[in-house]
Amino acid sequence: MWTDSHCHLNRLDLTPYQGDLDQALAAARATGVDRFLCVAVDLDDHPVLSDLARRHADVGISVGVHPCEDLAMLSRATVDTLVQLGQGDAVWAIGETGLDYYYSQELREAQQQSFARHIEAGKQLGKPVIVHTRAASADTIAVLRAEQAEHGVLHCFTEDWETARAGLDLGYYVSFSGIISFKSADSLREVARKVPMDRLLIETDCPYLAPVPYRGKSNEPRFLPQVGVVLAELKQCSVEALAEITSSNFQRMRQDAAQSRRGV
Image (cartoon, helix red, strand yellow):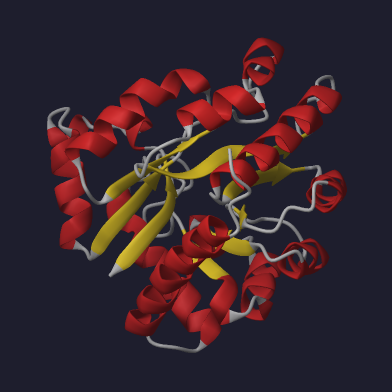
């Protein structure tokens, strides 16, 4: 019923499950989560994530390099490398990529170049691009426009409505995490109210950002329905309807990207 459109399964705290990821996934499935996009943060994640996807039919993976990685890893993310690793049905998306100037702008240019290469790889593969943006919203939208990006998601969205609207105008989806349940997130909840239902996605970004009432704990996919409860209230619909709509949106995002494939 639920699709966790962004999670880091290889980084979960598995202590409650005796170190067994299969048990953590079973716990999530018991709450209605039946599809998981396990997102890479660097190229070295690929063998581990590929093994996860081989063992679990409801787990897809991505290929990409997070903008906060070092220059060496950002540079390794060439278009050819991303396209090579991004082949196959198990790879559902490219990323996460994007821009993050929160801690430093030292690698600003390298981040932008890496971001553009991820977008190009997504076009060649016909796969949506997962975009991370923090303290860099104007440049993020500028790169998306310059690269004529059309298929992807602004993940774990925390920016303002103007940024969301710009992404929506480009054809992107907007995904919300447990942050929308935080007491301090009134402005973000206002943004969520404005995002059209047919462009809405939901995620945990686990093991980070556990929603209320689990805030402060290590996040995991079984907490996703709690994010859905908050979003459903904001959108004035049933929780069941929100689960169905966001899962349908996720599938449509992938299908639309595949239909636009440029060709390798």
